[in-house]
Image (cartoon, rainbow, N blue to C red; front, side, top):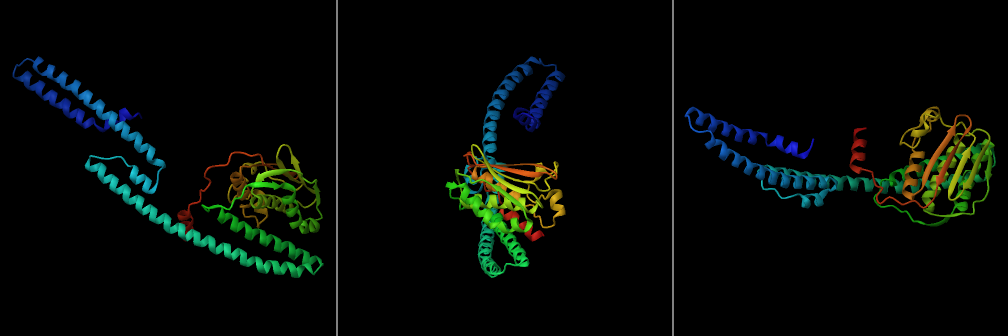
Amino acid sequence: MTFAVQYLREHLAVICLELSFVCIFGITFYLYHLPLGAVLYPTGLCMLLGFVFMGVSMYHAYKKHKKRIGLKTLQGNILKDALPENTTIEGNDYQKIIQSLCEERQEVEERFSNIYGEMLDYFTIWVHQIKTPIASMHLNLDAEDLRPAQRLKSDLLHIEQYVEMVLTYLKMGSESTDYVFRTVHLDKIVRENIRKYRGDFIMKKLQLAYIPIEERVISDEKWLSFVIGQLLSNALKYTNEGTVTISFERPKTLCICDTGIGIAPEDIPRVFEKGYTGSNGRRNKRASGLGLYLCKEICNRLGAKISITSEVEAGTLVKIDLSQNPLPISTVTFNPYKYVRNQREM
């Protein structure tokens, strides 16, 4: 519906009232046998003047309408200050309501932002504290070379990974990030993660195919290491025999391929969705549906692209395109108010 049609509908009562006045004068002149020209001539002039007045009024109303449309993206005090002036009682009433709602929203956001900040601080401290006994247990198990000790070391490694995943998930919604973009050596990051999961390779008797990658890319070393570690962990989790291959494609694409159970075709379009585990996740009760979601979100913030191709019972190939794509201006989509409210409702 166009603005002009909407405007005319809103003022239809006034237009009908003016036409009824003309009809009353016309009927009165007719009953008194007066010339109708005396009514029609001033009616025509008044209608012409009315059209001019309505056109000017519609133009000003359209300008205000466009300005209000532009206010949709504004929030808080900026929205309150940008509201157009109103000369009507109804308009002023609505502006006062909007200002009151803006103030209330700002107070709610500040309150729950503080709650979210305190929660993030708590989990950050908790993660660092829990790492101490985990490290101690690793040291104690290093002295043992028995298979049960190797199994415990592997379980501890996965516990540490899940703890890091929790902290990473919370940090994804933080307005302040610790991204540090610089030139990083891919071979160094890959080797660190291979060394980290070497116990799983040994226990599952999987082969590793890896040729040193003499390539440097611009990225954040810590966050990129998290992505590579998560993808390598997934490859090990869903591969029972065969090989895990880490390779590099020109110009700047890192590939992690396995010979595992693969992913069903209907699951591939949704593997990066938060909480989606697919058919493999339903069989593996430990799957959280957060790993690939976090990888996708981190790659978006690093300006990288991640993609997956897979075939059931044949394996999975994950590619990370580390070309220097434009970084998004703003990536914060987490709503602390919504998060805390949902936690209370659970």
